Length: 494
Image 1: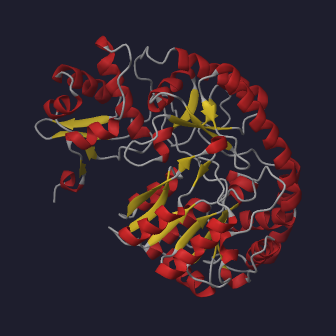
Image 2: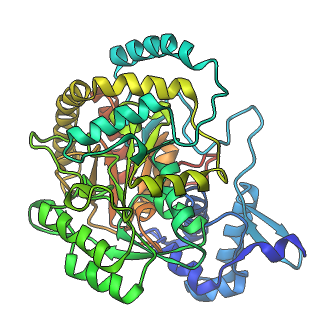
């Protein structure tokens, strides 16, 4: 079979819908540049999959209501930028631009340590320096006890699983060691559950908006995300409609639910106790597994604790699978996460895991084991830092962008901002010309939704945040003056 027969095809109407509102307000001769800019952003952000055959020039021109000359010029620009590859008489396909001569990395993350680049795409903190150094030093000492065995463990090291189980128990969810599976971060945990519990074509209920990498994991496995709209309410808060969730489960008959009830990414919403109780009851009554993402649970900016969703049902239910992570609580460089569920489900997931990997690095697990012993103190210090950072960012937005409406989350690491205009993707694309990385609203949605929204994390140092916001303000003021495409790297969202 020819390789191109295996590649994706997208019709002109679907392509036009994915493009959203891409036209600059000034219009005119900049249409081709704006069109090329939007396609490149969609490719680099992962919303337009690689190896997708784009529509023919004439078809897309009709769907977008522009001239064929405009589409042809945009395609030429994209070919020159390495975003499209073409074969005469066969069509054009999306691809990542080749690594530029001179050695700039083509990896999907911003260059580490490049202070000229302001990264507002990743809602992730720097490491707590002193606790991290102490934990790392102690872990090196602990490593001696593990050097006599082969180092592979599908479930995770016993000391780490014990520490995670104790942490769950302390939060009000009695947990035993055999109910914990250690993973290579939360993303790995989500992908593992999707692999184990769903098949191609199966439906997975997700909040809308939701965590982009979870949507990618569902899509990559061939499953179908069924959106459950979250709604903005009084006080700039977003909330769940539990009646709508029940109706969605009844109508869609999903194989899995994926929800983020603690400081939901990106809206910052928190599901109340009544909603949590009903959520667990829905899972039990409909026999629909519930994947609960609690990666933000320990990043609370309020005093009162949040009860884990699994605590509202049977402690050993296989229908509730809870994902946790060290990335937000401690540091993303550790790449350690976990799944908490029933012991039989842990064994099932461990058996499935061999299709993906054979376990976590031992040293990183030992570091996280040490850090968990200080989790309460680290969380308290984080709360002070992040509360001040949130308030600072909100104050600066009110001054610099008075038309924007941000949320005021009680936890997590980012604001979800209503821009007042459907320009989020254009803003993200233009910002890269000012060495500023931001994550457009549609990255958190399905089929191009949320062009009126933008997620901004408050994890940068205050001085760096102020400089980043000045660049964002310049970008906002110049938004309709679309310039030529830049040779920029793709951005992953955390």
